[in-house]
Image (cartoon, rainbow, N blue to C red; front, side, top):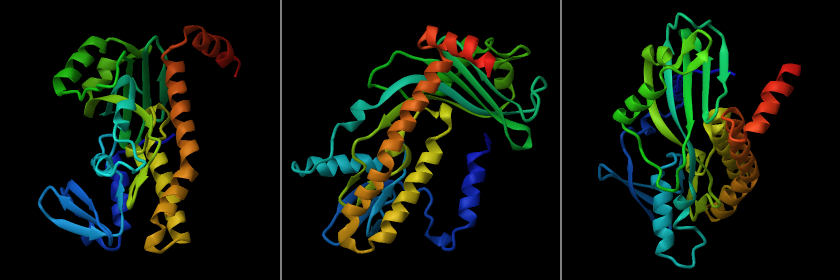
Length: 287
């Protein structure tokens, strides 16, 4: 398993783009209009762009999905749920971060630390950096919060003494952080990913628990399936079948990824103490 900065990955992708002038930064979507001839997007800056389709890769709090729900609500016969976000579950919250130069850590190591409702994942990365994750099971409904820096500070203070290894605590890693953020861990695979000329990919369509490292990979898989479907149907009239084919190719795997990622997290955090005991104390030592 390899970890590296997301910025580096984005730089690699950006370097391969031939028409860099088409990349528009800080141009968030304000609204989407579905027209007879295509799609119109109004940006937060007041600019209007027209095109053949919209692909919303804008995360769990997707503006594109919100616009799809709004448009669907104005057309009662449209088969697109307008309340899909109510079904998003959150079982854990997590501090993600990158730290550097930890004296008690050996380069190239990876470490999963199991616990009761608590899990650590620490993994080495390039340039002596590594990602650390601090997961805590929470009892929570559909009103998932967005955490502040104050929330993160309280979270870290409470758990800074927890051991990652025999010689390393969470607080020691956190004190050497370069970046960090506290975030809720949403888990969902939405039932429908498209409407008319609008399509969702990545976390806006399917978001697993990140412990399995499949969130970004799943987004790449969905985009690849979209390209495959587009190559087989290049006319405007085929967008519905293109999007359906893409979702059909990805839906069951996305569901499996979300389910298996949650099961992995549950095993590490001892949601079922007896099962975790059997796996870690009896089966694992035999392997």
